[in-house]
Length: 291
Image (cartoon, rainbow, N blue to C red; front, side, top):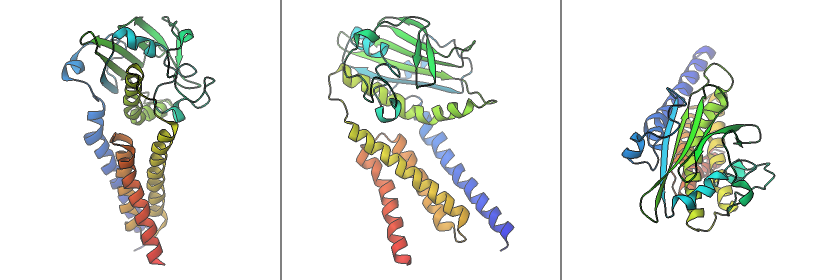
């Protein structure tokens, strides 16, 4: 087999590998994550802000039931943001560099309760959205500053009874296919399924008075993601550089599936850790016996 044939077979194998993983994501993961926690009625219900972004590339409605009244939940929503109360999710990623510290707030912060239309709410040190509209205890809309907006983010509160409320979050995002902002859009495509449910559960825990998740637990979960990602990257590289590359291709496929599982399964973190650690242990064992 000559060099051209080898390069062609490896290239085809990598395309097939990425196609399989993309298919798993698009057909087995993405549809469910776009409607995480939402009922059919909530998916069909019009929300304020729906008219801001027409024909969105990314359209998600997520929801959670909280043991609290809208007025109990609203203050936690109002203070969300970078350099504000944080996002109640993955603090070790979302709050890096925040002058308020790495931890998201575990109490209502009075000085962050004043929010008005036109205010900027930062998502990171360099990116922000603008408060487009708000009605206290009912809904809050963030949108980007473009006209018309390319993104809109709606928080809506719907009381169920005197002691329970549905918090619904809807995101509409139109991708910037023709400029470099598409990189941020694609990051949102994959990260949003992880971040928004975590934020919803973070709000729920705070309203209901549960203990705040330790940073060590977050660090362990993020470490699992990194291990799976590195396993996938190294295996993919070995497909490129090794002459006998089929074993590396199989490891890359397993590592890619393990990464998707770790990111999107929402299983206990020790269960998420099992596939990447099993791949790592198997690779080490195989390498030691090949010597």
